Image 1 (cartoon, rainbow, N blue to C red):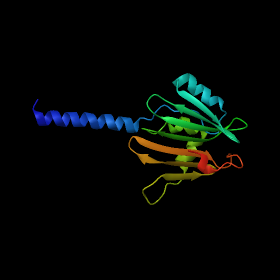
Image 2: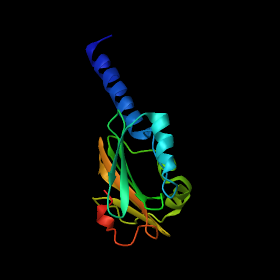
Image 3: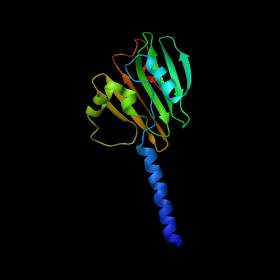
Image 4: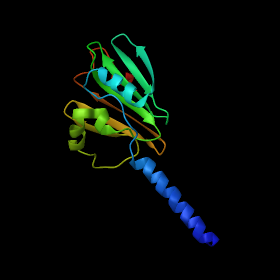
Length: 157
């Protein structure tokens, strides 16, 4: 095989691997709007490192997976996940992350003007914000009517 053909084949294989990383979502975690027990299901299935940080009005369950994905689940005093935030090299599995609210995200109107910065989708009480660049993606989703009184939206990170 001559050198130019070998370089093209290597570049094509590298491109295919990069696209697979972008297209295939990382295995995800607990589900928005569900009980905190969904965090336990993820612990059993994915064996992440979990840290729980209690706050005054809620707690944050932070899951770190081996591939660098971090998911933070915000759980209110009643034990319901009212928000999730993520960061990592790829986008999480939004179907699992949003659960029954995924259909709302799909139906949300898309911004007409594409601009730099995060994409914000609103559908009913569901708000999804997502942005970043290759290998450094982040976002958050929350139910605006489920955020405990006294909790700032800016705390969801």
